[in-house]
Length: 262
Figure 1 (tube, rainbow, N blue to C red):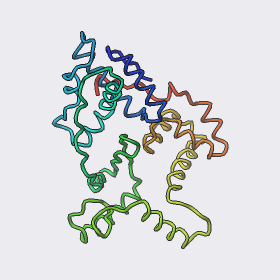
Figure 2 (figure 1 turned 90 degrees about the vertical axis):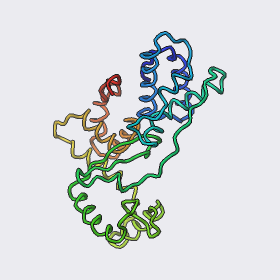
Figure 3 (figure 1 turned 180 degrees about the vertical axis):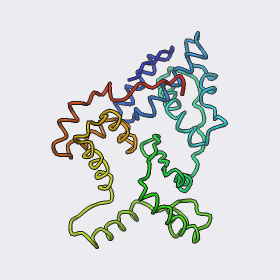
Figure 4 (figure 1 turned 120 degrees about the horizontal axis):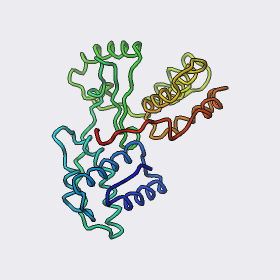
């Protein structure tokens, strides 16, 4: 748990513990936002002894540079914290209004110029980026040129026939059909994600790699909220599990972030 330093610190620690015990805590995003709110209160209200509506409004108000969705991600942990306090009679501050969620336009999240995918809300309110391999970027560029002729003003990068988006069942069905056409064994589309992790880890063997950095990059690219989720793949890589586990120090893997300058 990060160190909270404002007058709200005891309440924040209790709230975080409660959320973790309830299985409703995303450390990589929620704790960051709570830490920033804690610093905001300490810096702007150094003599305060209790939470006020002004403190909440000054933090939760939508900023000019934000979309509704980015504002939602930033303030959601604080809104949840206030709800926690109100239910226990620890504050009379009103819960701020969360901006309406905007439809996600997956087409705008695909940057074909730089080859980067913007993945939003894949893990709770977490957000991460995936860099495309050159071969995949080329294929997606070809696809975009063709599909744009049929759906000139499409909302989604991979539109369905009705102009909406493809759902999980569509992906699973078509993957099974294509896979069984050329393979005898069974596989699922989700196993491509497992393969991505394992292939990356296998390439580290014997390279004298910078372990901490590569593990962190792999974890973030997969949208994992904690490194423990990434460590699961150690057991799937023969001969490497003991080596990786021996080098893993949870406190040392991720460098400290200077939240004051975010």
